[in-house]
Length: 331
View 1 (cartoon, rainbow, N blue to C red):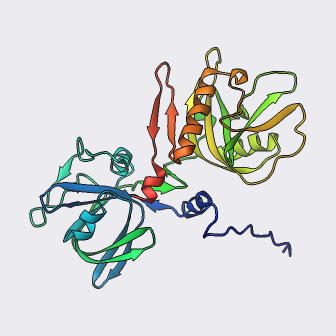
View 2 (view 1 turned 45 degrees about the vertical axis):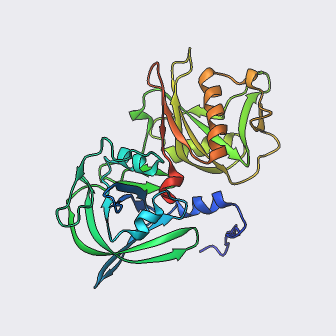
View 3 (view 1 turned 180 degrees about the vertical axis):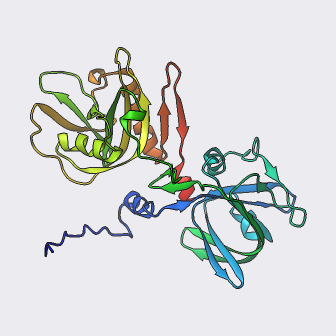
């Protein structure tokens, strides 16, 4: 057994990098819930939360956290009852809708009413708990709602899971993404370093691009992305799919993962020149590809508000699907 112990790179939690703290919280795999209630006029309110847990069996208690900045905070703290709906893995769209700031969250969502409480329930969810408001507690920038479970239902199903800022599937039959399922594919890495991103170019070529390589058969996402990072002398955590597109004139698709650097770059990377650019000094006219330029422009805008989406370009018209990961953590 080796006596070598890897040093721990501790970070200060108070007054430090909030993004790193949020990412660390995100390593805890959770389910996803939608919490609903009615105000004193009978209007429905709801929010998405993954900060949910069981507390006690006797009495039966659960808790969920709501941000003090939430528009519906006063409604939930004053409500005499509320419901917690645990979502199925097919209900990601519902999670996104209730994580948004939309004033019409319930539009288009199938709702089941309860005769005794009148609280709206998300139809066909994995489980639901009808709760009486048992207690509320102040907790920093959140309020903890403790509910006494009056009644509940549950059905066999795969839950919607949330991990490292995005949804994942945990079905027994799910397998890692591999190129066998993706046809011709390149894997690219959008690596963030403070307010900038890493771009590379051949020293004999004037155009810049994100670091990428062809995705080899049977390589997992982790192996493929780490090989890309290794090729430019850095290491990082590349956990989030950010964009899928095909540049004009290319025969392959590119799947881009985003993440943060965890070590500094080497001085030399062979024939590659590696540089960090921010939004003000990036040489846009020398960035290769319309989709790549559009993706980088979107990244800088989303980073400013710390809310990222996923871009999918099937053939012609693309679409950005919002993940709203921060709203999942802070409803």
